[in-house]
Amino acid sequence: MNRNIENYLEEMMRKVEESVKSGEVNYVDIVDSYMEKLSKVAALQIAEEAERNGHPFSKEEDLQKIKELRKEVGDLRFDLTKAEDSIKNPK
Image (cartoon, rainbow, N blue to C red; front, side, top):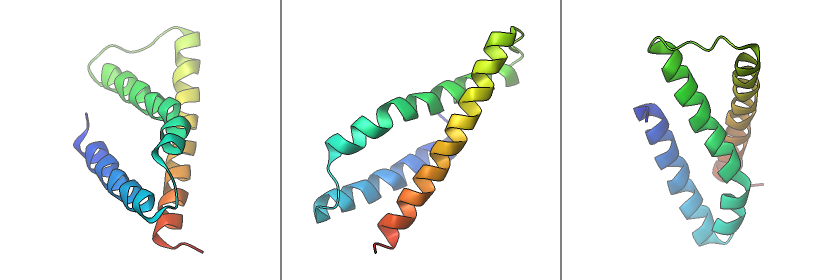
């Protein structure tokens, strides 16, 4: 796994643990909401690594899937940034 992603996930986990300890959220909610999303991040990472290693996707349906993954992962990164901001600066 990309070291930057590992560092990011470790930092997010640390913040999640702090939020759980404070009673703001619980692990079940987090797992339910992010399990599917995080698997999409992993799928996109694998697809991009395959392309970098000379295994480009040529079928239109595959290219469309990757395009959709990029959008969804971009949305997820935005959601995670918002979540991180709300953890750092609770209202």
